[in-house]
Amino acid sequence: MGFLLSGFFTRRNFRGIVTLRLCQHLASGSGPLRAILPLLKVMHKISTHSASMDLPWKTSIGGGIAITHGWGLVVSPGAKIGNNVTIFHGATLGRADKISNDGHRMSGYPTIEDEVWIGPHAVIVGGITIGRGSRIAGGAFISSNIPAHSMVSENPAKIARTDCQPDIMNRAPI
Image 1 (spheres, one colour):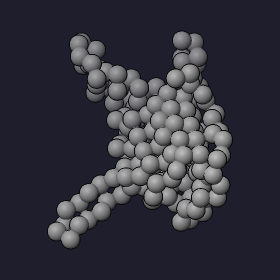
Image 2 (tube, one colour):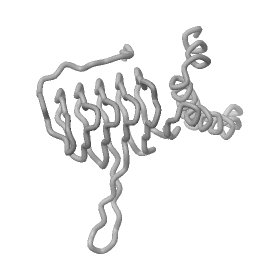
Image 3 (cartoon, helix red, strand yellow):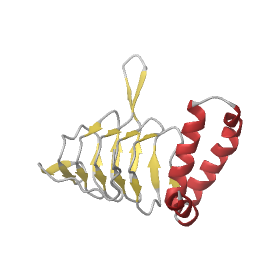
Image 4 (spheres, helix red, strand yellow):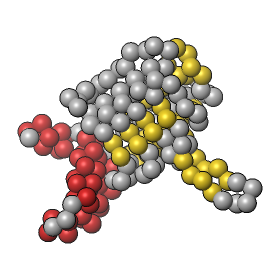
């Protein structure tokens, strides 16, 4: 508990994760504590704003998330982030829309599987999956599925290596 409180007061990136988890916990339950959810949402907004991150409280994030620096991080609310994922500053996990000939819009959000490392200023968009244990180099632009244990670089993205070992900064015992 001491680590949690210490991290909340001393690490601006951690504060955003704590308020996200609290919002999700209260939203999923019922009872008198749910009444403070609106206040907690405001607290989350202030926490992420002070960390210069756009991290909606509804985003699905597994345990062991490591957000380094945080500056400029943008995550769409429909994105799914697995366990033991590391995300560097300036990364974007965003929505991509496809519009059919009849004007129907289909939106897709990325799914980041467990043990993925996402470098600075990487852009991952659309209804795609980044496979378990992959590494996304800084500045890469990804709009298609990436197989597990791949190293991806460049813009547009190219698989630079396969069979890579995961690089986990904050392993959670999950």
